[in-house]
Image (cartoon, rainbow, N blue to C red; front, side):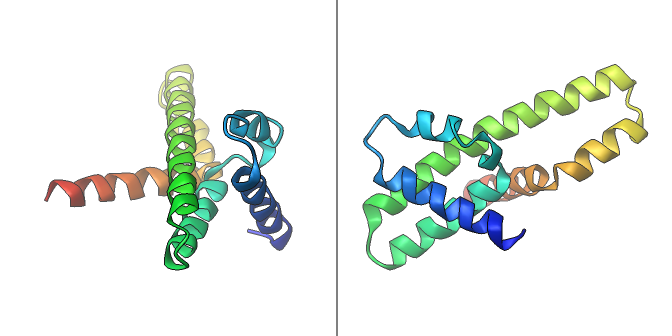
Length: 121
């Protein structure tokens, strides 16, 4: 991930932390190019840092927003994979590039699966 994108993520996170309640969808919609797995991961990292610094309210807020974004993003990605699978009759030449281009989604999905498994045991 390049430094310019990281700075853009941090700027967006700051906007979210400083916005009035209820304005989050408007802010996220105006920055759709940044709403991806990288943003979710950055939000989780910032939330962990905020929690360590004692800012539990903002840490919880970011964790909640990141969770909502991850769930929506995972659902959209799943639909895209299922549609590509159906349209191509499971052709790997179609599916593998799609999966390769969305490794961040696969990492988030895998991470969520591992966390769910840990909670069950």
